[in-house]
Image 1 (cartoon, rainbow, N blue to C red):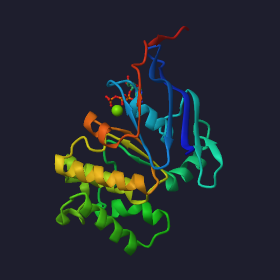
Image 2: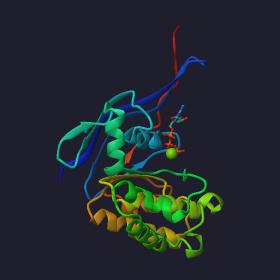
Image 3: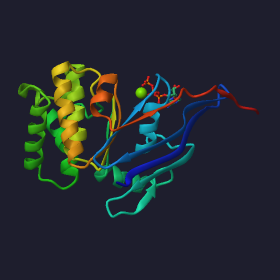
Image 4: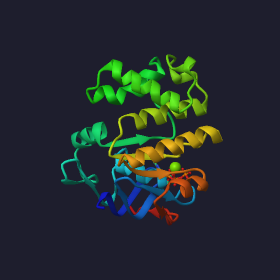
Length: 236
Ligand SMILES: Nc1ncnc2c1ncn2[C@@H]1O[C@H](COP(=O)(O)OP(=O)(O)OP(=O)(O)O)[C@@H](O)[C@H]1O
Ligand SMILES: [Mg+2]
């Protein structure tokens, strides 16, 4: 099967002008993500795993390399030089990102936070909320919390709301950054089941897992990132 995402020689560094240094954040990364498969990114802390996901979602602008993404109509777009409006469009329908932490509006109820991606795609609020409740239930979020804003939720509860929001709209490519880091074993099992069923529905995933056991359970491909080399001194 053809990859939906093909990354070649991706590099990202940050220039800290005040200190006169360049900090590498990921270096020489090659990988593919394929429909219905999960590619796991592994490597030591600081190797640039999160940075790769942020480059794909274009939270970070890559320094060099290419990230060819196959769109729904079959045409390819290089995410490393796609325009902001092209990226906004892709984030709405094609590329989802479950980040490590939940960032959301403080007064919005959990059910509406989860429903929001579907509403943005044109689904009615009633249907979107029904699907959101179903997913919150699958992920073991207690019903008493569904209409409460997640600001005061525990770390694991917030993480489940975050996951539900990322999974509800079934993007074609799903980026996951340690989605189960603060979940108990029972809820982790539910997430594994959910990710497997999403995989079977043809979603491609690029994921980072805290526990190596999850890589064994879920990954079809494993890509190891080497530790980035030294900080570069900039010359005046
Ligand atoms: N916005 C940024 N500004 C400066 N340096 C950054 C930035 N983002 C990442 N880095 C640097 O890039 C390197 C890789 O960071 P990244 O978060 O991608 O690592 P990681 O492999 O996800 O680590 P962990 O396993 O701890 O989550 C680190 O040295 C980090 O300090
Ligand atoms: Mg990280």
